[in-house]
Length: 156
Image (cartoon, rainbow, N blue to C red; front, side):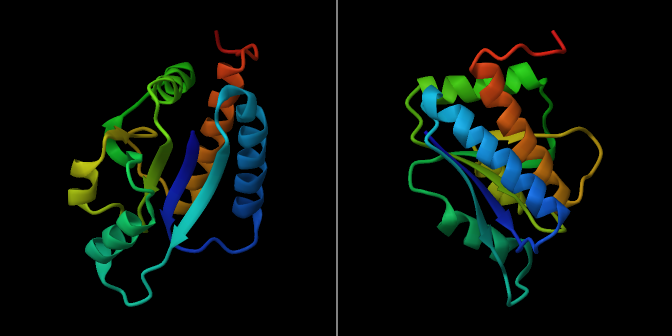
């Protein structure tokens, strides 16, 4: 299974990019033996300023055909890390070839894109900056692969 974070905006070099790169490298390395062949970021940028609808169109074009889609949205489902890992395992075991996590720009995702997604995920009721949400998702993807690999989880 290939995992993509499809996100609005370009991340410049800095601490966020360093963290994301580190966590995704770890997730990919840990995930290889688990059937997760790739963990990557696809960035889309609406340079014409068309708002959420234009961003949604760019996200839609970037997502691989047939992918399971997960919208990061404050109204989505909150999960524990073990539950998130189990859900990723279910997608993998169910034959999902591509899993795409969608992160909107500063104003969030277009409501139609959220409604059409296969799953809605929330990192809590607070609103997080979209660049920080990338870091949090990358870390949770790494944590999920570690949990699926049987690494002891210190919270259980």
